[in-house]
Image 1 (cartoon, one colour):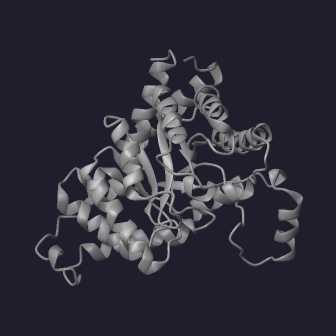
Image 2 (image 1 turned 135 degrees about the vertical axis):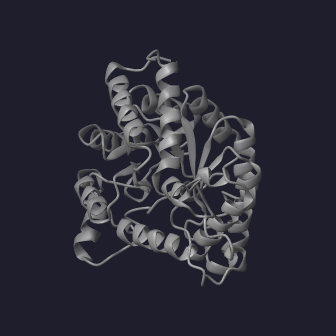
Length: 341
Protein backbone atom coordinates (compact mmCIF):
# COMPACT_ATOMS: atom_id res chain seq x y z
CA UNK A 1 0.00 0.00 0.00
CA UNK A 2 1.32 3.46 -0.89
CA UNK A 3 -0.44 6.71 -0.10
CA UNK A 4 0.02 9.60 -2.48
CA UNK A 5 1.77 12.64 -1.05
CA UNK A 6 -1.48 14.59 -1.27
CA UNK A 7 -3.40 11.90 0.63
CA UNK A 8 -0.68 11.71 3.29
CA UNK A 9 -0.75 15.46 3.80
CA UNK A 10 -4.56 15.50 3.97
CA UNK A 11 -4.69 12.66 6.49
CA UNK A 12 -1.94 14.15 8.64
CA UNK A 13 -3.65 17.56 8.69
CA UNK A 14 -7.02 16.04 9.62
CA UNK A 15 -5.50 13.79 12.26
CA UNK A 16 -3.67 16.67 13.93
CA UNK A 17 -6.84 18.77 14.02
CA UNK A 18 -9.09 16.04 15.41
CA UNK A 19 -6.51 15.18 18.07
CA UNK A 20 -6.55 18.83 19.15
CA UNK A 21 -10.34 19.13 19.39
CA UNK A 22 -11.46 15.60 20.34
CA UNK A 23 -12.55 16.52 23.86
CA UNK A 24 -14.89 19.29 22.77
CA UNK A 25 -15.82 18.63 19.14
CA UNK A 26 -19.43 18.18 18.00
CA UNK A 27 -19.60 15.97 14.92
CA UNK A 28 -22.34 14.96 12.50
CA UNK A 29 -21.61 11.37 11.53
CA UNK A 30 -23.74 11.15 8.37
CA UNK A 31 -24.04 13.83 5.68
CA UNK A 32 -24.33 13.68 1.88
CA UNK A 33 -23.09 16.81 0.05
CA UNK A 34 -23.57 16.87 -3.73
CA UNK A 35 -22.06 18.71 -6.68
CA UNK A 36 -25.13 19.96 -8.56
CA UNK A 37 -23.19 19.81 -11.83
CA UNK A 38 -23.04 16.01 -11.48
CA UNK A 39 -26.81 15.57 -11.21
CA UNK A 40 -28.41 14.22 -14.39
CA UNK A 41 -30.40 16.85 -16.36
CA UNK A 42 -33.74 15.10 -15.84
CA UNK A 43 -33.24 15.17 -12.08
CA UNK A 44 -32.29 18.84 -12.15
CA UNK A 45 -35.44 19.55 -14.19
CA UNK A 46 -37.55 17.84 -11.54
CA UNK A 47 -35.90 19.94 -8.83
CA UNK A 48 -36.71 23.12 -10.71
CA UNK A 49 -40.30 22.02 -11.35
CA UNK A 50 -40.92 21.35 -7.65
CA UNK A 51 -39.34 23.97 -5.40
CA UNK A 52 -40.74 22.24 -2.32
CA UNK A 53 -39.09 19.32 -0.58
CA UNK A 54 -38.79 15.97 -2.29
CA UNK A 55 -36.82 12.99 -1.07
CA UNK A 56 -33.91 13.27 -3.49
CA UNK A 57 -33.27 16.93 -2.69
CA UNK A 58 -29.48 17.49 -2.71
CA UNK A 59 -27.47 19.71 -0.41
CA UNK A 60 -24.31 21.36 -1.71
CA UNK A 61 -21.09 21.69 0.22
CA UNK A 62 -21.63 25.39 1.03
CA UNK A 63 -25.21 24.65 2.12
CA UNK A 64 -23.97 21.89 4.42
CA UNK A 65 -21.37 24.19 5.98
CA UNK A 66 -24.04 26.82 6.59
CA UNK A 67 -26.29 24.20 8.20
CA UNK A 68 -23.44 23.12 10.48
CA UNK A 69 -22.88 26.73 11.52
CA UNK A 70 -26.58 27.30 12.22
CA UNK A 71 -26.67 24.15 14.33
CA UNK A 72 -23.45 24.70 16.35
CA UNK A 73 -21.91 21.55 14.87
CA UNK A 74 -18.17 21.71 14.32
CA UNK A 75 -17.48 18.92 11.83
CA UNK A 76 -19.30 16.48 9.56
CA UNK A 77 -18.45 13.08 8.15
CA UNK A 78 -19.45 13.35 4.49
CA UNK A 79 -20.02 10.82 1.75
CA UNK A 80 -21.79 11.01 -1.57
CA UNK A 81 -25.57 11.08 -2.01
CA UNK A 82 -26.63 7.83 -3.71
CA UNK A 83 -29.94 9.28 -4.90
CA UNK A 84 -27.97 11.78 -6.99
CA UNK A 85 -25.65 9.12 -8.46
CA UNK A 86 -27.82 6.93 -10.67
CA UNK A 87 -26.31 3.75 -12.10
CA UNK A 88 -26.73 2.15 -15.51
CA UNK A 89 -25.81 -1.23 -16.91
CA UNK A 90 -22.14 -0.47 -17.61
CA UNK A 91 -19.87 -1.08 -14.58
CA UNK A 92 -17.16 1.15 -16.08
CA UNK A 93 -19.57 4.08 -16.40
CA UNK A 94 -20.88 3.41 -12.90
CA UNK A 95 -17.28 3.52 -11.68
CA UNK A 96 -16.78 6.89 -13.37
CA UNK A 97 -19.88 8.53 -11.90
CA UNK A 98 -19.27 7.16 -8.41
CA UNK A 99 -15.63 8.24 -8.53
CA UNK A 100 -16.74 11.77 -9.44
CA UNK A 101 -19.21 11.89 -6.55
CA UNK A 102 -16.50 10.70 -4.15
CA UNK A 103 -14.07 13.28 -5.53
CA UNK A 104 -16.49 16.11 -4.73
CA UNK A 105 -16.58 15.12 -1.04
CA UNK A 106 -12.79 14.88 -1.02
CA UNK A 107 -12.32 18.30 -2.61
CA UNK A 108 -14.77 19.77 -0.11
CA UNK A 109 -12.81 18.23 2.77
CA UNK A 110 -9.49 19.49 1.42
CA UNK A 111 -10.92 22.99 1.14
CA UNK A 112 -12.36 22.79 4.68
CA UNK A 113 -10.14 20.33 6.60
CA UNK A 114 -11.37 21.46 10.01
CA UNK A 115 -15.05 21.09 9.08
CA UNK A 116 -15.49 18.17 6.65
CA UNK A 117 -14.18 14.60 6.93
CA UNK A 118 -14.36 12.88 3.56
CA UNK A 119 -15.53 9.27 3.71
CA UNK A 120 -15.61 7.03 0.65
CA UNK A 121 -18.35 5.00 -1.03
CA UNK A 122 -18.02 1.89 -3.16
CA UNK A 123 -20.45 -0.65 -4.60
CA UNK A 124 -19.65 -4.28 -5.48
CA UNK A 125 -22.90 -4.72 -7.39
CA UNK A 126 -22.83 -1.66 -9.64
CA UNK A 127 -19.07 -1.71 -10.20
CA UNK A 128 -18.39 -5.44 -9.98
CA UNK A 129 -16.10 -6.87 -7.34
CA UNK A 130 -12.85 -5.82 -9.02
CA UNK A 131 -14.17 -2.31 -9.59
CA UNK A 132 -15.39 -2.00 -6.01
CA UNK A 133 -12.03 -3.04 -4.61
CA UNK A 134 -10.14 -0.76 -7.00
CA UNK A 135 -12.35 2.18 -6.04
CA UNK A 136 -11.76 1.44 -2.35
CA UNK A 137 -8.02 1.53 -3.01
CA UNK A 138 -8.29 4.91 -4.75
CA UNK A 139 -10.46 6.28 -1.95
CA UNK A 140 -7.92 5.36 0.71
CA UNK A 141 -4.59 5.76 -1.08
CA UNK A 142 -5.36 8.78 -3.25
CA UNK A 143 -8.31 10.54 -1.58
CA UNK A 144 -7.27 9.95 2.04
CA UNK A 145 -10.53 8.32 3.16
CA UNK A 146 -10.17 6.21 6.29
CA UNK A 147 -13.85 5.11 6.14
CA UNK A 148 -15.42 3.45 3.08
CA UNK A 149 -19.17 2.82 2.92
CA UNK A 150 -21.48 0.48 1.03
CA UNK A 151 -25.28 0.67 0.72
CA UNK A 152 -26.74 -2.84 0.31
CA UNK A 153 -30.24 -1.53 0.97
CA UNK A 154 -30.61 1.01 -1.82
CA UNK A 155 -28.47 -0.94 -4.27
CA UNK A 156 -30.13 -4.29 -3.53
CA UNK A 157 -27.49 -6.81 -2.48
CA UNK A 158 -27.13 -8.81 0.75
CA UNK A 159 -24.85 -7.21 3.31
CA UNK A 160 -23.14 -10.55 3.93
CA UNK A 161 -22.73 -11.66 0.30
CA UNK A 162 -19.39 -13.05 -0.85
CA UNK A 163 -18.72 -9.89 -2.88
CA UNK A 164 -19.36 -7.64 0.13
CA UNK A 165 -17.15 -9.72 2.39
CA UNK A 166 -14.32 -9.63 -0.16
CA UNK A 167 -14.69 -5.84 -0.39
CA UNK A 168 -14.67 -5.59 3.39
CA UNK A 169 -11.45 -7.61 3.48
CA UNK A 170 -9.87 -5.19 1.02
CA UNK A 171 -10.98 -2.13 3.01
CA UNK A 172 -9.63 -3.61 6.25
CA UNK A 173 -6.34 -4.51 4.56
CA UNK A 174 -5.95 -0.83 3.67
CA UNK A 175 -6.41 0.10 7.33
CA UNK A 176 -9.74 1.80 6.71
CA UNK A 177 -13.09 1.20 8.40
CA UNK A 178 -15.92 -0.45 6.45
CA UNK A 179 -19.30 1.25 6.90
CA UNK A 180 -22.79 0.23 5.83
CA UNK A 181 -26.24 1.60 5.42
CA UNK A 182 -27.86 -0.62 8.05
CA UNK A 183 -31.62 -0.26 8.29
CA UNK A 184 -34.94 -2.04 8.36
CA UNK A 185 -36.11 -0.39 5.14
CA UNK A 186 -35.12 -3.37 2.95
CA UNK A 187 -34.47 -7.08 3.53
CA UNK A 188 -30.80 -6.74 2.54
CA UNK A 189 -29.40 -5.51 5.87
CA UNK A 190 -30.69 -7.69 8.73
CA UNK A 191 -28.85 -7.69 12.07
CA UNK A 192 -27.46 -11.17 11.53
CA UNK A 193 -25.96 -10.01 8.23
CA UNK A 194 -24.11 -7.16 9.93
CA UNK A 195 -23.03 -9.61 12.61
CA UNK A 196 -21.44 -11.82 9.93
CA UNK A 197 -19.51 -8.82 8.64
CA UNK A 198 -18.38 -7.71 12.11
CA UNK A 199 -17.34 -11.21 13.20
CA UNK A 200 -15.10 -11.52 10.14
CA UNK A 201 -12.68 -8.96 11.62
CA UNK A 202 -13.56 -8.91 15.33
CA UNK A 203 -10.68 -6.61 16.28
CA UNK A 204 -11.48 -4.05 13.58
CA UNK A 205 -14.38 -1.57 13.77
CA UNK A 206 -17.33 -1.70 11.39
CA UNK A 207 -19.89 1.11 11.22
CA UNK A 208 -23.63 0.52 11.00
CA UNK A 209 -25.17 3.79 9.81
CA UNK A 210 -28.78 4.26 11.06
CA UNK A 211 -28.57 1.50 13.74
CA UNK A 212 -31.43 -0.39 12.13
CA UNK A 213 -33.48 2.66 11.09
CA UNK A 214 -33.05 4.13 7.64
CA UNK A 215 -36.71 4.54 6.76
CA UNK A 216 -38.41 1.36 7.97
CA UNK A 217 -42.12 1.35 8.79
CA UNK A 218 -42.75 2.02 12.48
CA UNK A 219 -44.19 -1.32 13.75
CA UNK A 220 -42.37 -3.50 11.23
CA UNK A 221 -39.04 -1.83 11.95
CA UNK A 222 -38.98 -2.55 15.67
CA UNK A 223 -37.50 -6.04 15.25
CA UNK A 224 -34.53 -4.61 13.35
CA UNK A 225 -34.11 -1.80 15.89
CA UNK A 226 -34.04 -4.25 18.78
CA UNK A 227 -31.84 -6.70 16.92
CA UNK A 228 -29.38 -3.92 16.11
CA UNK A 229 -29.18 -2.92 19.77
CA UNK A 230 -28.60 -6.48 20.95
CA UNK A 231 -25.94 -7.01 18.29
CA UNK A 232 -24.06 -3.87 19.25
CA UNK A 233 -23.99 -4.82 22.91
CA UNK A 234 -22.54 -8.27 22.27
CA UNK A 235 -20.35 -7.56 19.20
CA UNK A 236 -18.24 -4.72 20.51
CA UNK A 237 -16.49 -3.81 17.26
CA UNK A 238 -19.82 -2.56 15.87
CA UNK A 239 -20.01 1.25 15.94
CA UNK A 240 -23.37 2.88 15.29
CA UNK A 241 -24.29 6.28 13.87
CA UNK A 242 -27.77 7.25 15.03
CA UNK A 243 -29.20 8.93 11.93
CA UNK A 244 -32.54 8.38 10.18
CA UNK A 245 -33.71 6.65 13.33
CA UNK A 246 -36.86 7.25 15.37
CA UNK A 247 -36.36 9.55 18.34
CA UNK A 248 -37.86 6.98 20.71
CA UNK A 249 -35.26 4.45 19.60
CA UNK A 250 -32.47 7.01 19.90
CA UNK A 251 -33.45 7.44 23.56
CA UNK A 252 -33.99 3.75 24.31
CA UNK A 253 -30.67 2.87 22.67
CA UNK A 254 -28.82 5.49 24.72
CA UNK A 255 -30.39 4.21 27.93
CA UNK A 256 -29.68 0.55 27.14
CA UNK A 257 -26.05 1.28 26.26
CA UNK A 258 -25.50 3.47 29.33
CA UNK A 259 -26.93 0.79 31.61
CA UNK A 260 -24.92 -2.01 29.99
CA UNK A 261 -21.48 -0.82 31.08
CA UNK A 262 -19.62 2.49 31.16
CA UNK A 263 -17.66 1.88 27.95
CA UNK A 264 -20.64 0.82 25.82
CA UNK A 265 -21.67 4.37 24.93
CA UNK A 266 -18.27 4.80 23.28
CA UNK A 267 -19.67 2.95 20.26
CA UNK A 268 -22.47 5.46 19.60
CA UNK A 269 -22.37 8.69 17.56
CA UNK A 270 -25.02 11.05 16.25
CA UNK A 271 -25.78 11.95 12.65
CA UNK A 272 -28.39 13.87 10.64
CA UNK A 273 -28.38 12.04 7.29
CA UNK A 274 -28.51 15.50 5.64
CA UNK A 275 -30.25 16.28 3.33
CA UNK A 276 -32.66 13.50 4.35
CA UNK A 277 -32.62 14.95 7.86
CA UNK A 278 -31.90 18.46 9.09
CA UNK A 279 -28.73 19.02 11.08
CA UNK A 280 -30.53 21.67 13.16
CA UNK A 281 -33.47 19.41 14.02
CA UNK A 282 -31.33 16.42 14.95
CA UNK A 283 -28.78 18.28 17.06
CA UNK A 284 -31.35 20.50 18.73
CA UNK A 285 -33.31 17.37 19.58
CA UNK A 286 -30.39 15.34 20.92
CA UNK A 287 -29.24 18.22 23.13
CA UNK A 288 -32.70 18.47 24.66
CA UNK A 289 -32.95 14.69 24.93
CA UNK A 290 -29.77 14.57 27.00
CA UNK A 291 -31.19 17.29 29.24
CA UNK A 292 -34.36 15.25 29.78
CA UNK A 293 -32.40 12.07 30.53
CA UNK A 294 -30.95 13.81 33.59
CA UNK A 295 -34.30 15.11 34.78
CA UNK A 296 -35.72 13.26 37.84
CA UNK A 297 -39.19 13.48 36.27
CA UNK A 298 -38.20 11.23 33.37
CA UNK A 299 -40.78 8.42 33.06
CA UNK A 300 -38.27 5.57 32.62
CA UNK A 301 -37.89 3.98 36.08
CA UNK A 302 -34.39 2.73 35.23
CA UNK A 303 -33.14 6.32 35.33
CA UNK A 304 -34.43 7.11 38.82
CA UNK A 305 -31.63 7.43 41.31
CA UNK A 306 -29.06 7.54 38.47
CA UNK A 307 -28.45 11.28 38.03
CA UNK A 308 -24.90 10.78 36.77
CA UNK A 309 -25.70 8.14 34.16
CA UNK A 310 -25.42 10.68 31.36
CA UNK A 311 -22.69 12.88 32.74
CA UNK A 312 -20.76 15.46 30.75
CA UNK A 313 -18.21 12.91 29.54
CA UNK A 314 -20.93 10.59 28.21
CA UNK A 315 -22.69 13.43 26.42
CA UNK A 316 -19.47 14.74 24.88
CA UNK A 317 -18.72 11.23 23.67
CA UNK A 318 -21.98 10.75 21.80
CA UNK A 319 -21.93 14.32 20.47
CA UNK A 320 -18.50 13.98 18.91
CA UNK A 321 -15.63 12.45 20.85
CA UNK A 322 -16.58 8.82 20.10
CA UNK A 323 -16.48 9.39 16.35
CA UNK A 324 -13.36 11.52 16.74
CA UNK A 325 -11.59 8.64 18.48
CA UNK A 326 -12.65 6.19 15.77
CA UNK A 327 -11.29 8.58 13.12
CA UNK A 328 -8.04 9.18 15.02
CA UNK A 329 -7.38 5.44 15.20
CA UNK A 330 -8.35 4.92 11.54
CA UNK A 331 -6.24 7.82 10.26
CA UNK A 332 -3.22 6.61 12.25
CA UNK A 333 -3.68 3.09 10.91
CA UNK A 334 -3.98 4.22 7.28
CA UNK A 335 -0.96 6.51 7.62
CA UNK A 336 1.12 3.75 9.20
CA UNK A 337 0.25 1.23 6.49
CA UNK A 338 0.83 3.84 3.82
CA UNK A 339 4.35 4.54 4.95
CA UNK A 340 3.85 7.71 7.01
CA UNK A 341 4.27 7.39 10.76
